[in-house]
Amino acid sequence: MGIRVVVVDDHHLFRNGVIGILQNSPDVEVVGEGENGFEAVHLVELLRPDVLIMDLTMPQMNGFEATRRIRKLHVPVHILILTVNEEEKALFDAMKHGAQGYLIKTVDPDELVEAVHNVSKGKAVVPDHLAPTILSDLSNPSTYEEIENAQQPLTLREIDILREIGTGATNKDIAKRLFISENTVRNYVRRILDKLHVINRVEAATYAVREGFIKNYK
Image (tube, helix red, strand yellow):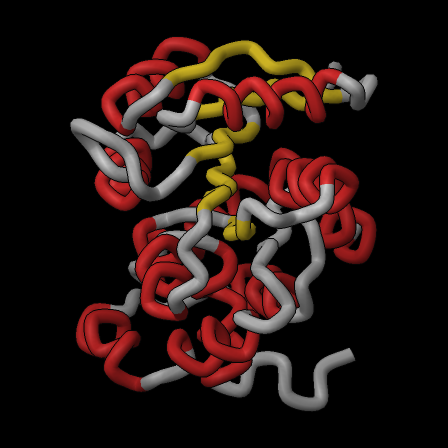
């Protein structure tokens, strides 16, 4: 099956351009489109796509709020922000709200398609010049105040999975390395995120690095 994608952007011409680029990729299927955050939430709940590509600045409901509401739906959709906003704070806020990827609208078509593939596999995607910022900010102790106050203990197997997440491994990679099924990995990842009170794999990976789970780990 191809990667099922929903595209939400209030600029009709730009949205059509993104859809056209994606439709040229044989393993990507655009299953829906919208023009504001309300429609993004509705389309995710209705269509349950693999990837949602969404702008941040939109009428009625912006991308930050839409991302937050979508995460409350507990739908396993991967959110890729596509915006003109290059501010570091916007990147950080988007990732903290639950986005897995963040791209600037000047991105090349091939890079956009590659990002969709990577995000659909659970990989984090951020612009190269902003990547140090997200890692630095997520490593800030204040980010983990809630974790330190209310963290549940991880099992030995969950620690193994967390270590793999910290190396950037996908669910498929982890399954191969630990000789378990991808579905089992997904269940472990979900449990780890719940226990650590983090929103996505980016925060889990940064936590793993910060706490030394992958120190000297190979």
